[in-house]
Image 1 (spheres, helix red, strand yellow):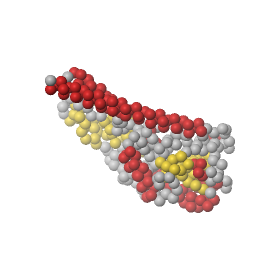
Image 2 (cartoon, chains in turn yellow, purple):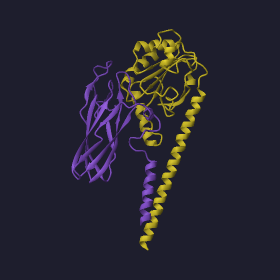
Image 3 (cartoon, helix red, strand yellow):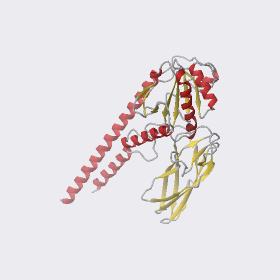
Image 4 (tube, one colour):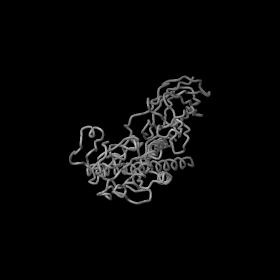
Length: 218
Length: 167
């Protein structure tokens, strides 16, 4: 009799675990589907109407060249919502980077200097961290965000640093090599981009291009 | 009693589906791009014979693509992502120490004074195992973060599988 009770209790406990696991799986799938839908909506909303690239070479280099920069709204390390649309009328540098990326840490101080130098002319810089974020685990997510914020502070970054918790990198071409930097003009079009650490002079030329001050092509 | 074991087995299977394994990609971030090319390849062995019940060593050979480097197991800066090996231990095969080679010095052209500890070309990771008699598969993945001279790429996992025959 005792043995039967034990067996029934164990089966019930196991069933409970199975139900919990099933519910967890279902919830995770729902979250993933919601993320995917949001991403697809974002891609559709930002699908450019036409191509106005200056030359074929630029088109080959980056499919976004001459097109409207994909819109995004992300949270920065200070907890503020930041949208690309907030910078309408400004030239914007969008820099995808990560805390583990050594070349990014060479480029970032240059961007800080350019922000100081050209900010008065209407230049804004946004850093988007491509560090992994575990959305399933709140405490891990908090640690990961804190690490990004700490790194931004150590590097004395003087522009907003955003957490990419919505896979914004995907509509920007599925950013792989870091740093990847986009230069967006005052009308919102991508006028240049660089993958990997570009020479400082090229970055400055691309910034001038975005500002409408001329400069070299990327 | 048989029902109990069936239920436990099913429960364990459901749990495995609900939880992420250590090397599985996270939901967002650069490293979730699963179709991205590998920068490190597992070379060999595909099969190894060992003495059952005794400490044995599998020398896993990997190759980093030309022009690339990956952080060693002991990078000099704590913000760099160390190379590590995740392997699945089973009741039939116990995993002991995993020995990584020392890294070699490397410096970016734009930071000549900052030496990184990296692996390039071919390198060997030694995995200590103790197996029960029989044929077992050792599965795992090498997690690494690669860079070239100007770019760094998100952490990736190079899968490994070794057929272990223990006699």
